[in-house]
Length: 347
Image (cartoon, rainbow, N blue to C red):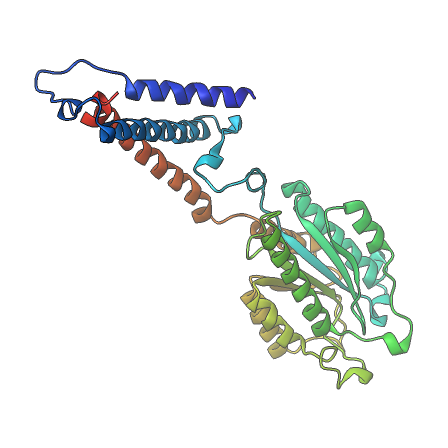
C-alpha cells in the first residue's frame, strides 16, 4: 500500500509539472486561438492530450521507481511483461551422480574401505565443495549403475535425504543383475536432465542456464554389458555414443575412474578418445589412483559445477542496457512534452 501511494504521488507530481500553465513568451504563438471555444475538435484534442499526459506520467513514474528504488516494487506491469515470480528467480545447476555398484566395487582400496565406499566419499566431497560456494542452491540426483540403472534420488536440494540414500547403496551380488552398463545409465540420465530443463522453462519456476546440466560418473573400469543385454537397444548402448548425445543436449560429463587394476586399465588410445569426448562436453576424464591426492581432482569437478550455474556476463548486462535505453527514451519524451507548444498552452 505504501509503494502504491508513493507511485501515485510521483505520477500526479509529474502530471501537474508537465501541464502547468506558463506565461507566453515574446515570440510564443499559442495554438488554442486557432479554434473557437465551442469547437468539438478542440475539446476532443484537449481531453486526448490530458489522457495521454497522464498515462505517460504513470509509465515514467513506474520506470523511475524501478530504477532508483528497486525494492519498492512499483507497478511495473504497466509497461513491462515481467511478473513477481520471474523477479525472484535465481540461476542454479542440476547434477546427476551415477555410482557404479557392480561386483568389482567390493575390492578393498587401502584404508578407505572398498571402492564403493571411496566412491560415496567422492560424491559427498563434490557436493560439499559446491555447497560451500553456492549455499545449497543447486539440485543433485543419484543413480546407481550395474546391469540396471535405477534412479535412487530424484533431483533435489534435500541433502539429508540424498546422503541417507547414498549410504544405502550396496554392491550387486546377484550374477544375473551384474554388469556395468555405463552407456545405458548415461542415456537415462541425459533425458532426465533434459526433462527437468523443459519443465522449468515451461512453468517459469526457476532459471536453469543451458549449460548448467552435469552428469558425474564414478566407476572402477570400462563399461561391461551383461551378456543377456547384447541385443537390447538401450542396455547395450555404447558409452561413447551416449556421450555424444549428452554433448548435443549441452550436458557436461565427468568420468571419474577410481583404482583401476591391471585388467581394467584403459589403453592409451581409448583413454585419449574418452578424454576428448568428455572435454568436448566441458567436462573431463579423471583417473584417481590409490596414492593420489583426490582433493585437488574433486575440487576441479566442483569448480566446474559452480561455474555452470553462473549466468554469462553478456546475459547479466542485457537487462541493465535495456533499462538505460528506457530511461533515456523517457527523459527525451518528458523534455519534448514539457517544452512543446502543444503541452505548454493547451491546458
